[in-house]
Length: 238
Image (cartoon, rainbow, N blue to C red; front, side):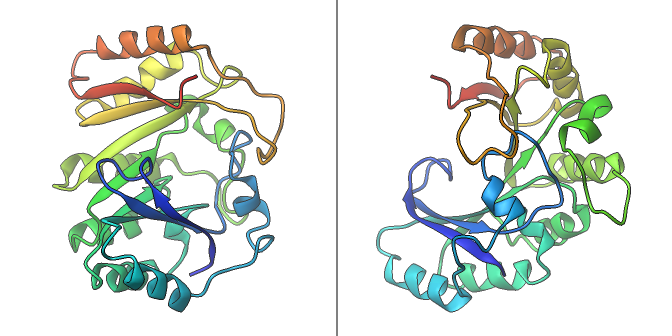
């Protein structure tokens, strides 16, 4: 695993649990609004942690922490992800995975073996605007929407707790786009709309978030979509 960061304690990243967050370097997307640009473009810039360092830390914090969130970057790019998760679970931790959903074969393995307890999958945009929104993918292959379709269905059909989430950017998302997303993912237990926040680590500057009032109106319109019966909530709103 290319482990490029560690948040030793968080109350936000794993719903309902005091957790540690492990940041994995590298990503197959280049979303221009990504706020973890360093992890995507230059994952070695802050140095790396060995697995032994991480596992030793987790052993010492077992009396405090109740979960581990693995995020990125994109964790499913790493072939040794399942093995790493097994080592964390052997310590008694529950594991949450953050993913962009572009590796459904990895997600299927993790879900099938019940190796993760919670999954948060990013839905970057409606189907028609997905390729544009993620910037680029693997240089050797064209963007494949079917991979995302598979991951959405895998989560819907699984017994694992999960959420979908979208970072909402004025320049990239209209209200109509977000209603199309809701039609796509309806039936999910929860959908979070995250307000875009600019910072110095964003891959490309110049984007803006919707206001709190605008976000609330968008959320209310999504709640009215037939079949969208789960929780629809805002996250990170000023």
